[in-house]
Image 1 (cartoon, one colour):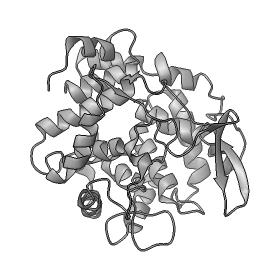
Image 2 (cartoon, helix red, strand yellow; image 1 turned 135 degrees about the vertical axis):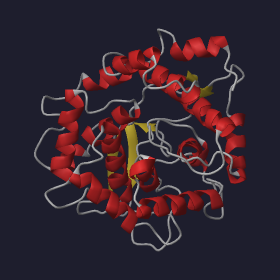
Image 3 (tube, helix red, strand yellow; image 1 turned 90 degrees about the vertical axis):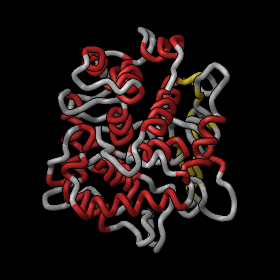
Image 4 (cartoon, rainbow, N blue to C red; image 1 turned 180 degrees about the vertical axis):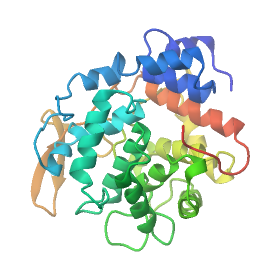
Length: 337
């Protein structure tokens, strides 16, 4: 895939975040981990840029915003508390090699995964569990007993149609992508037969729906690029997941790939459309009405880049997808980095 010299400088030069630089070198240029430029970019993540900024607000015990002894304090307020920051730091390339990440990971494992239990807790929600598992796998905790039990829970709770859902219902939803995304982080060589079968069923669930068909009408938020994703789905999320799993040549990705190419700006970049896919700004945060609970709470989107202008993160994500589509061999392959 041809990337102009100007675009490459924008994504890898001194003004680019080291996480973007790392993603471009690894996923667009396909440089190996021992490449000097890849090592330098990886070393810079957490020392400067977005990850360093988030880590500067970390409390000594690994918390953000709401310290305390309960599991709830890792989750609220949305999307500023520990759970949400950890998800983003894992996306940005942080691992347990950094002691600050170890503190946070151990906090999550302690609060959400007591002895002989998994991370599904009392709610059993795939969005929460899948995100936590994916985050911990990226951090480097794939051999932890709590993570292993949680992976078994994700396989066990997959619906017969191949999807997942957060409530009692027989069928899955495209919105509940976190289960498949967590399983995709397991290195190919260590996937059990049950995990491989679950991944194949999950991929087919998305491909049968072209990543975008669910219900009688088009759902507009899925056609907006946003980051952080937290637990929200959009077509960029679906394309990243399916192409990392090796399905880039599947013709059923065609409609989503056309959407991605149409979203490209004339300067070769992509922009973020929204910080939060469903709501408009209100009262300094985002007002989110919970009718069933008869209350209104405020959620606060985390925004790394401004909206509606060229986004380095959205651009490197899109280029990575197109690079995989152009170079994929037929059939699934290892998605873990």
